[in-house]
Image 1 (spheres, rainbow over the protein chains, first blue to last red):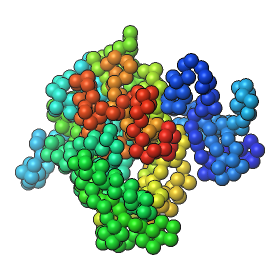
Image 2 (cartoon, rainbow over the protein chains, first blue to last red):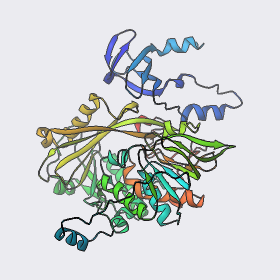
Image 3 (cartoon, rainbow over the protein chains, first blue to last red):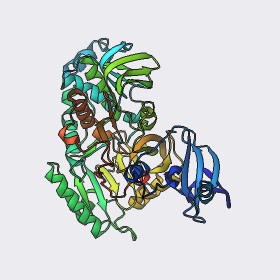
Image 4 (cartoon, helix red, strand yellow):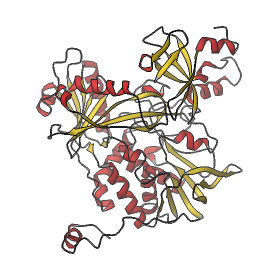
Length: 95
Length: 415
């Protein structure tokens, strides 16, 4: 697989490690009343779709940036690559 | 038809005209007491439901043909060298069932207890193996700690002088070994069919009939099948199948690649695993080296992997035994594996009444086939978990009761 890094251009997927579902960006509020249940769902439960999947990749042997890669789990085709920090900011996160 | 040396002889002198198909090819009935989805662990489940728990109305549904799923895509290793009390007795039960399986099924599944050696490469790793070996022996399994010379006697060809990862010893389980994987599927299917279990092939489950929180059957590509109880054992595809019942699981689907070299003269005494990288190898009866290593590390349902992992696995092999450098690869394939959040499986009821789940086998499902089938059948038939599978619950993460052999936490691609 070739991941088209937004800053560095096309890079071999072997330079990256995959963390998993991009919903891991959406860390729940630890002070909420239902924090225990929310963190259980956040930490352990996954959607695991066959088809389009948004996931976090870390450019470990590169610029060490976190990316959100939209990829098809049936064909390994990559549709979109974004910087995770921009995705997080769009969701209203400070960083 | 019972197989024996006598039937072989009789058929041999009478032109082999008396052999019959090993199982029927029934059309699915509209209703069963129990429907099991998946004909790997599910085939074993069907067999034990009929044999041990007296269930007479059982169907096993298979999406493709028998043996097309993970039961035919693994590296055929059987062993019981786990440590934690929720796992080890279960896998030891499995190994005991393997030891008696050919007699039980009246089928040659080629159980070969050629032994498995987990190599260690540092003093702390040897200490960890000593501890694991003790845990194994406490469960009634066999384990023997080998020193460097002990390993050298068995496997003189290993790279003992590797500067970075010298071999310091190994943990040897003599009762481990390999089993012919396709024959396992065929043997269970034939024995279950004899007991009246319907094996329905080319029958994909497309949905579940669920009303008022109770599962009453399945929708399939061959029509609706009603059932009092439905058991799902489709590890690798658990995520997408259980999504049809509206469930999200503590599982990611990943791709694991396996490899076979060209045929070589007998060189390996048994199964070997490299303790510094991730590489395990055995030699098939045809002579090919059957080996594998890490999963690719990203979610996949593609049943094929990428080349960097091929290179990584082969590098592990070369570090361990440089003599295989000239052997050519014959085949590479990928299988889907359910990677769970703690590296351990699930055999449990779901929150939907009448729907039972078996999955999350990571890359260790094959060795578990008999015990998985037995314990799943126990759960479905008696509505109570088998004591050896009582820890394999779906809600264990909510309770903080993870079974994490490797201790890496909720990071499925590291287990």
